[in-house]
Image 1 (cartoon, rainbow, N blue to C red):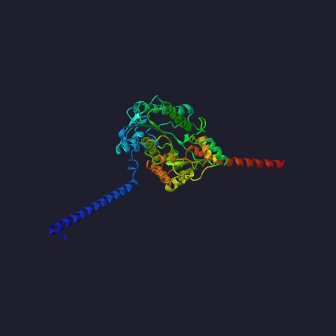
Image 2: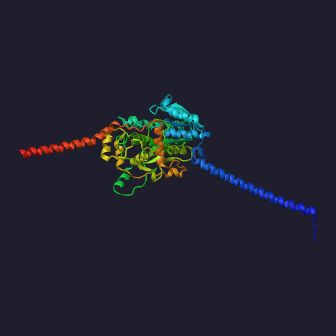
Image 3: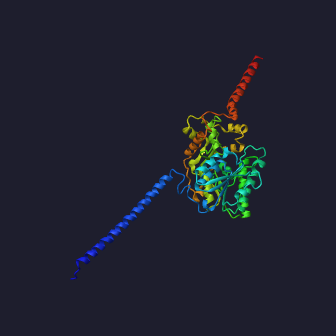
Length: 458
């Protein structure tokens, strides 16, 4: 039998227990690290659900461009969409050079300066007029990216070619030339679904009762002309000019275009423009009826987010910003959503018939014959936004009623809407029409009645 001394036996047992203790300590440490990691991830996710400044949302940097690469140019910086783009860029820490018509107009710049003071990035303002030659050459020097949002938005021009079409094409070409000369990496141009829809073949198929597919990035508006839809014509032709420039000049930057339908959302100041005008018209009770228009709806913050997504990531081409079927609404649905949230406001609820809309288009420059024709084709095919989602963009604002509520509330906060009715002159015409028609009918009936009596007496 092998004899082991007590001291050796003690050393062996002690070593064995020490190994066990070390192993238990390592397991405990590993479990603690995993638990802390899980709790940290869970906490971050909870915070991100209510914050716009979280990893995976605004703080997520692109795989192609980031603030460390250099400054970016934002044209038309005071616009509705551009303002929200500026907010995202500043929150990410970009140096932004914003082009505006008048850098001394404090009223239009105040909200952007407030963002500049509050957020990590910086923004400076540079004069640029789309009607001038090469307005973006100087501001583009030294920058790595450009978001060309500026575009003429004149809807009642006497000469639409000179007032809308030529400036839109010239401005886009100027922006791309400036970007190419500055050796930029990425350029995004704001277009519209007006450049995509309508397509006559889809309208014809719809009229024949045939199934019609959604509008995609492959579609081009072939209905609009300068005489019938000058604004959509300008968006289509400016985009085509941009694609020709890229194909022929082969600049060093990657290029994308953003197309979106009605974009609603919170105001950054009291100046209401773009699609939000539809919300203000309803809140102010400018007409006592709802017009029979319809559209897909997106949140302006997602439109802005899509711009930055395409700028920062290695994706290019056309991108439609459109959500699911719940985001398609008639104007009456929008009015009902507003009425639910703002019951004390003079929001109309009765939709006028198409003949009345045609009369309104005659007396109100804000409604065109082109929009009347679009209304005739409601609901029509939807827009397919899958290409943008497939590129990695995740929509952040998916509750359309909340988007509408925030748009309305911001107008109240900025004192755009005060709860009183503000009828426009065209509304009085619409109100008077039924009485005029009734008066004419009574006059005709009375003439026939008295004429009949005279015949009998004779």
